[in-house]
Length: 128
Image 1 (tube, rainbow, N blue to C red):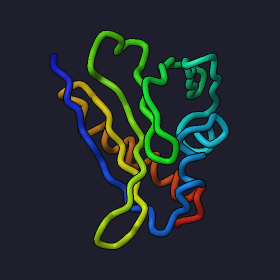
Image 2: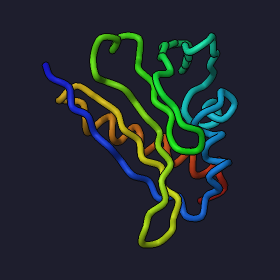
Image 3: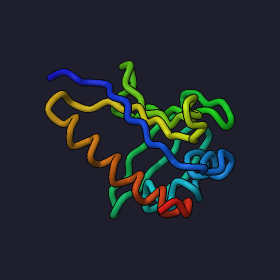
């Protein structure tokens, strides 16, 4: 079965870029909205949800712009997930663009999962 890469853009009103960066790039930030707990060893990030742990490698980042990870099981592929901060030109609104990859028959479920995760991110940023 194939895999599909998708991108979702989430406008975050007048979110602080530095606050958003902390939420997507630090263990303490990621634990507030994305995972239950995590640990970092070098470039390996171990994300945990309800006792299940999944390892990802930090493959690229540019401070206040983006951070990109590859899940351990995706090594050797072009699959990755990325959090990118952008400013929408027309409105000046800060937005988070999430790029991810999912099996072809699970793309809609993965998109809904990100929608739910970003609801919590917005809440933690005080944007709701």
